[in-house]
Length: 447
Image 1: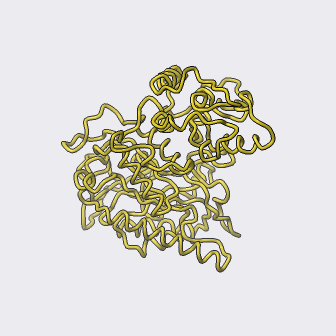
Image 2: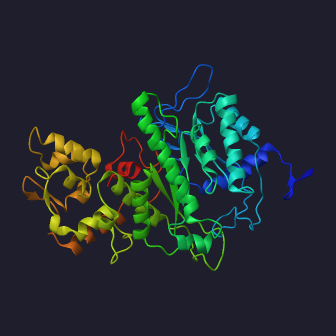
Image 3: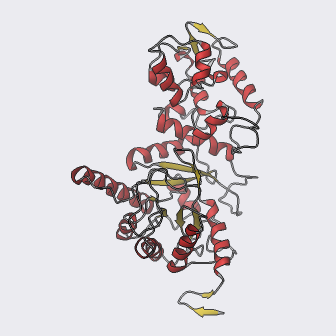
């Protein structure tokens, strides 16, 4: 059965078919992790995103929780050559109505399948038209169903700011995807998208968040505009950009738009085109290195210019970015673990934020020895080449770059699993009561 629209014939399909098509189309969007929302339940409502937030990830209190991750529509009017949902690609198309998606979310929530919603969409007809449909969906959830659970919404670049502002007062987190690192990349692979239409909404969202923060201090009421902040996503490997340009862009986004996270998505070869690289598979190791470097930017006090430069514009595939930086700055090492300041401790490979704080606190009581460092959580197989403890050096070689690198690479290659593989929660830990330091570091991001 069909009905006529101004644009095309749309086939009526069962809701189950729509869910299958649109959930599958949403899998390429990785920026669905979230936390930090303070939206509480209210009398007569259902759902609660307070405390840990809702995500397919670990919360701060150790819970693994879930959300409904789905597209509103995959019927796109854009023709980005890297995208599986591009206009010219021959794939099954589907679109929800606001009523269908709101009811679906509530029914899934009531059955305890999910704890929140991650909602994105292809650009259906126009940015404003699509954003209005997304707004109607979240408004229906909040106002008609009194749903107070977590909602993460993808704002559509190019949509009217008034629509984005209204949506921002209903959802917990908003994302505006950059997708490609440079204007040249957009011109070659996504000519219908403009840099200004992406950065403009990001700046507007940030200004609204700052305005609400200032108002919160005056009136002492909960912030109501995007309480969990905004994020974005960058595609890695679809364009010839070096890691340095990608990391500089991420650094600028953190500094100028106060983003909570920049997510990196390895390009998955889903199409062939003269402007696309010929890859046998997605560059997952490169994605992993960028996530490690991103962690160094956010929590360790590094800058993009310290980690990479024009001479070395990409990360080493054999060692992590922190080790790469340390080997390039051996004149700063070894550092005495009982005397180095906190910022220098953070720059030692194998010492993370938590272990640096523990070292700083513990040595006020008594000098630390080698055994103490292991108990504190220092990864000694990396740290030993860059520290002394009570004046003694425990490395297997002198402060020689090639020898230290050889030791680090050998230890990495002899590990049970490559450091960039996604971790299994239980399969390699029979009977273990806690994660080994290396595996724990991969989950937390500490280096």
